[in-house]
Amino acid sequence: MDKPLSSQSADEAGANLKPVNIGICGLGTVGRGTFEVLRRNAQVVAARARLSLQVTHVGTRREHAGLDLGASRVSRDIFEVARDPGVDILVELIGGTTVARELIEQAIRAGKHVVTANKALIAEFGNELFALADAHGVEVRFEAAVAGGIPIIKALREGLAGNRIEWLAGIINGTGNYILTEMRDRGREFSEALAEAQTLGYAEADPTFDIEGIDAAHKLVILAALAFGIPLQFEAVYTEGITHLKTQDVEYARELGYIIKHLGIAKQNGAGVELRVHPTLIPDHRLLADVDGVQNAILVEGNAVGPTLYYGAGAGAEPTASAVVADLVDLARDMRAGRACRVPALGFAPECVRSLPIVPMEQVITPWYLRMEVEDRTGVLSTVASLFSERGISIEALIQKAPAPGETRVQLIVLTNPALQGSVDSAVAALGALDAIHGTITRIRVEALDG
Ligand code: HSE
Image (tube, helix red, strand yellow):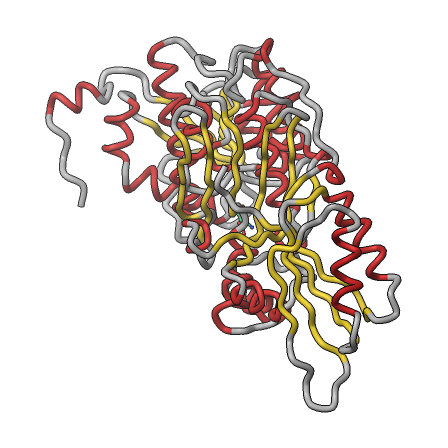
């Protein structure tokens, strides 16, 4: 049970001021979680907001049996919420990028602030939505859109405002991280781990967005815009999923002292900004290597603060609701102070947003893990090594597995030093043309995560 607030705090909670009226559209997992958090934490939320927050209107096509909606008006037409003159803040929790976009635009035009958990909408249409909100003197808040309950938007927008952000790297899809953890710890193959994630309700029935990296790319685009002051540009992200990963690669990586994680990486360098989502080998002693199961974590390197790490639940009803309610509290504080739009949506003043070039992937430099099946005969290893050295790629480590009884082929695993992707592409093409090499060459990038 929450302790009652003192009388002084009750005053502070704005007992005599008009409450903030909230309209919630969508009563799925996050909508229900938001109701529950607002109900259970009403006192502490009011004390922090210095105003009381009440849900006055709910837009839902679903049944809401078992959920006490109190005195809230309920509309089956969600646009009724956007039209309701009594609603101060509209919370969009329906998802998708068509109806949700229209709903948010209507709410903005009606002079309402908006809170959303919709990463696809922000990543793909955020530039337009923020401009529209600016023109109407209202805010669109989206803490819940990235990494569920982790307050990473607030951290980048405000907590790290004194830093030039050099790079960030995050485990920002819980389903993918669960699958990779199962492959590593239980030796499951990808498809088996995915089926389990679906059974446990982590992955969607159609998990394409999770396993193909699209969900992570949506989140990365938002983080990169906040970190570097660039526009949201979803189409510019290099996006590679985890569907092609094999349990043997997870094992070999471990032998070499690495863990495979599916990372979203954004880096600023002299040439521009790298934006990429892909499986990555990371040293097993890094903190990110210990982020397992459905948890998320984001490592952010600022030039004043150094490395900082944000960890927590990246999805789920109440963790995501925690972020939604944080945005509501922030907006209520601004409303009470009569100064909305104090912090620009993406942290940088709109006139300071920069159009930095996105670095083409051929020019990205990382070490590489490569695995190939080769004929076990004299001279093959030296041919492979010379194809790398001719392209200026130096080999850091190499493992050759003994052939299985009766087999003439072996697995060859090569770990390179940092190399231009273009050079590695060329080496892989040359290797693929050798008759001593069979099948597809597996290639995974490596990140040291140390600067
Ligand atoms: N499908 C997402 C994940 C949920 O697995 O992380 C939160 O965005």
